Amino acid sequence: MTYTEIDAEEAREQNSLFLEVFKDLEKLCNEIYRQDHGGVSRYIEDLESCLTKLYEPSFSSDLKELKNIRRKRNQLAHEAPWDAPLATQADIDFAVTFREKIFARTDPLAVYRKKKEEAQKRQQQTPKKPPAETAANAAPPVNDPAGYIPVGNRRTPRQSQSYRPIGCATMLLGILLLIALVVVFLIHLS
Figure 1 (spheres, rainbow, N blue to C red):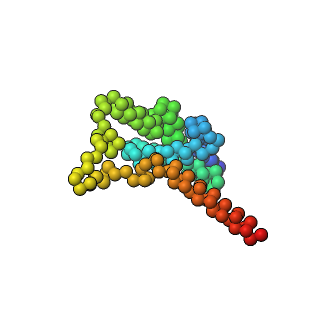
Figure 2: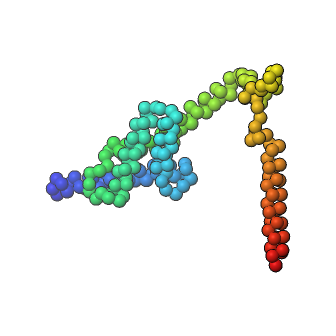
Figure 3: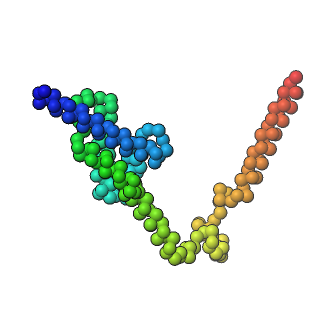
């Protein structure tokens, strides 16, 4: 065997091992999201979404590596020849480690959920302050001698529920009257 034949054989083995490891990660993510395929892609989408809410450097590096191994998997599955040296040992190690992180619930989304739950618990444990005075619980407006009511305390037809039924009833009566007029007109013509 020549040097290139050995390299091609090693690349095939490396790529095959990488695809097996990726398949295991994909299967785990599919189970998490209760879907048949695309679990890693869904995890990536959720991680991108959570990064907009909470920036963590480790989340960014995991996201970058997840995208990298997904790209390599897609290349091996659809484009690249099997003997192309595409997957590296680092890719395999990352996929295995990331799968273990998910099982241990130390992956970025699990950490994000824990931090979110802790923040909610802290918020529930802090004593509630009395609500600020709003238009709904404010004292009724006091008219000044000129009849001025502050703008924030005026009620408009849209704010009042009592205007809506009257408006609908009026519209229905108008439509019925219009239909009756058309019928009378048609009878009169014939």
